[in-house]
Picture 1 (cartoon, one colour):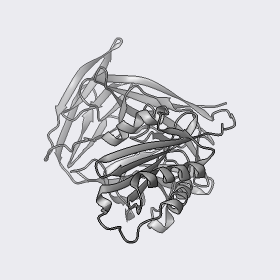
Picture 2 (cartoon, one colour):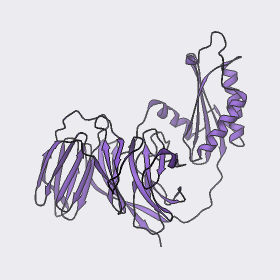
Picture 3 (cartoon, helix red, strand yellow):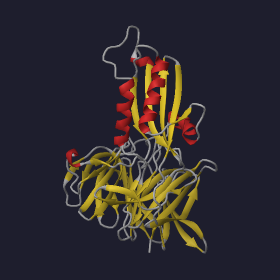
Picture 4 (cartoon, helix red, strand yellow):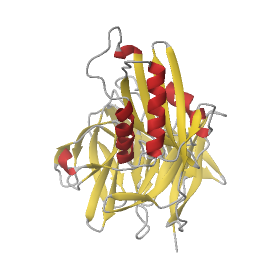
Length: 402
């Protein structure tokens, strides 16, 4: 589920190809010093500016701290402003990014109504080639013009959850034919980015919606009753882990109030998605937080002192825990909203709370708008294609290595 803003779109072209404002550097420190000198010259004598730093690369956040140290050695933070200078009119945004062959350090410097952008680039060191532990496979199960919130397919039928309807299809020959439909009426308007969760256990169906819930049965037809509800949503991860989480009905994320499988209640930071992973030392939970970070928690989801940030800025806000391949990936993750590359799903494996890529990225022609567990070893990815304006539901499956 991507959230794109205008600034990210404007920088995308700069990330993909060096413009005349792009300069070669030997390394990160040289790039930071070069951009600091250019920013200082542009702002003028006795310069003062508000500086923000962002890491949108696969490098750890410690490298962004190095950038800050090098930059502030030349353009230090201002304790007292020069006469007539307002920080509101002087701003510097430093972004650490990358493309296929280079790391990029971008400085956007604003002085009053004038803005300059410079990029300093240095070559990436090629990683040693190693066979992927698994590959990813995908299968298209449904497509339609109306948004798809979730879908589930089995031998007995296909259920498709949209903002207006839950629809049941049965296969006749090679085609899916509609066999039932239930209109969905929420007690309040849908949030701007609607989300919904569909769970099927045999013939029983549960539907989780913002401020509402539905239960019913599906066999040869569909019978479901919906009513206002503040009950938590059920979040699965792999084949062994469940989490009950309160959904913020007026938003598109989980509030942070959760219940573990043993009934223990916890409060964690608000998050978009959750995944569990099994390591040699035990299970861990990962939460994709609303601030864009993914954090690792202990199995008991205890206080923030027991958490750490995953050094993977290439992860987006949607993660799914999976199982089924021994000593292989345990988390599928989408790309972040402001990535300069196509939206994609990639598998990762964990060791001592450090995650490494375990498969090549699987790109999609469009934006991933929903990403849910589909089975212990698979995820459901809904992709919106901006060209033909279709929503397509895919099942992304792990294919284990030899």
